[in-house]
Image (cartoon, rainbow, N blue to C red; front, side, top):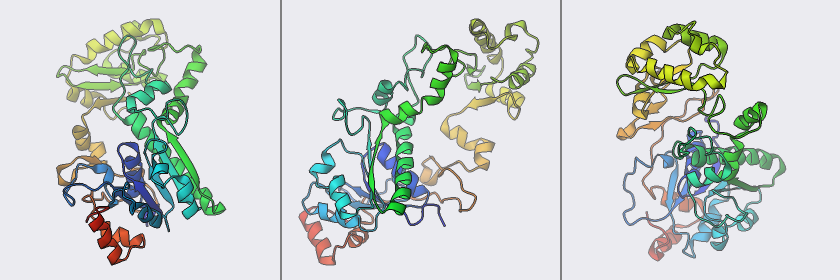
Length: 377
């Protein structure tokens, strides 16, 4: 039995964080119904849309007057609704929190946005990098003097999706004891700021200044990625004394006076330069043979397809490529539940008839919806 089996989610499909959150819940066994916009050519395979794997798809034009009742009908028996529209859009569709909670009082209504439901920027367009720039999370993304650049989508969009998932599940737990649902306002500016707390603690414990490249964690220390002789990269992060000693011994640098005090910031530039020269002497594979599997806090820097083939990742079956599309397997793992299967991505609208029936539509109602243009199958 999957850990979220029995949880039903209605997802008003959009882009980015909301669909990713829906995929995560589907991966863990929830019944996720994706309400998607009708397309000119329904039913086509779309294996590249990984965020829709494991969901049921219904094609429905939410601007059509008949569609509101269908969505409200789907809420009967649902635990969660996810939407990622700009604030006010769902209210204009007649599907805002007030409407939906009136229909199902125990519903958890999840709202995924970049800026949040209120504040001066709530109605402004934006993307991942804008949100994490404003929240402060982009500040430490690159060394001093370089443009701050973070890995695409991970800190903002995906981080926001994970906070939404935690918020939804927490609210569902409360709703199952209280009988009352609520609104979960998941904003990327909030979540990316919250993720800063570990680093903010380091800053506070140091001197309270926010200079870039001045701590063990933000690129100033020699713990870094280095180019190898073949142009590939490796990463080392041997911060603790015993790990540092292991790395120095394996690199032939034990006793080298340049590394006598790795915590002295004034030595960091010289230490980084020395390590850059050392790692440039061998290929990545040669460094892997020397360092991998030790306590030197080492790893090769892989492309995702290379990562999938690495023995550790392959043993844990972290990646798969059904239909030739590389994707990561569901996570995390549970000792008392089977490993979730890597579900297929349904064609848009594949489950339209069955979901409309679930919403209370009769066969005649379904044909009328199709004839009106509100849906297709």
